[in-house]
Length: 358
Image (cartoon, rainbow, N blue to C red; front, side, top):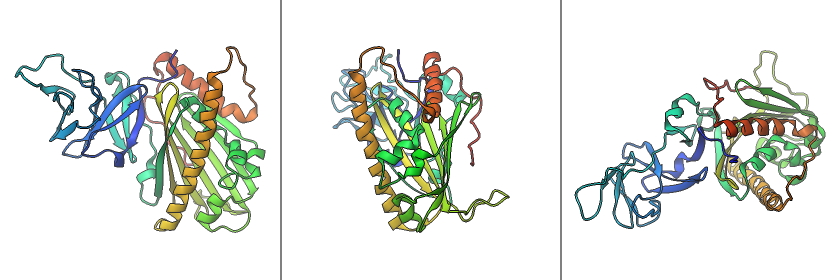
């Protein structure tokens, strides 16, 4: 049985990746071609010519106005995937049409709908508004993962691994030693995991970027929207500095960490990551530091999860995992994703869930 949820929006690319050249990426096992029309909007269609299946993302395929010309035999398609010209004849076969995909460009991401086109309007596009919002500065990237998407979900839902895998960057002893609380909103299908540390070491990731000296209050509030969008609301401040009673928090430093988890195939994943901050907005040095530091952390995860994928591929049938308290969020996420995959994601919220501001 497939582990990939259908009838769902997935991040296909950052908006900056797609321009006036053909761009191909495999999403949920489907090879998809992306490009921008002359009006700037993004189009998505199958990346395989109907004639001999040549990838339209491969040179010498190219754009002519708002059409794409296959670099093998010259079949030409409009922005909706309809073939409008074939070589050596004036009649275009009626069946010469590529599958097209609904696309939404939002929050710096290009989202593509995988599944039944007529379902796209009823499924909300997940939100990560900080990534292009006024008052935030964002760094971002994407790393390919030679492992199934569920392993990345497990990794992100249990941040105790920061202590061991990411020591010297974002991990300190308090992360692993502090208990978590887990809540599940079954109606909205959102999993919340929180870890609040009242007196913790300040890891280099935050010490260098914020300038805080000494120990800190550190809050990690996870908000996961299965199957594909992970939000980590992170707050740090000197020990004893808490939000005001009215909810304002002028003395805290806030970082919104976003992961868009997009299956490439059943056993490979596009790991999109972004870090948005509400401090040092114009400081390029801070941006460079956070970009390189977070990419290093992501690559440490990639190495670990690629190794785990190889191990799982060789495990005997019937192997039983051991789970403990820190796994409650990840297990809840697994349960929801499994139900979505089994049901074809029939149970989706009627309207977008309200984003937590915790």
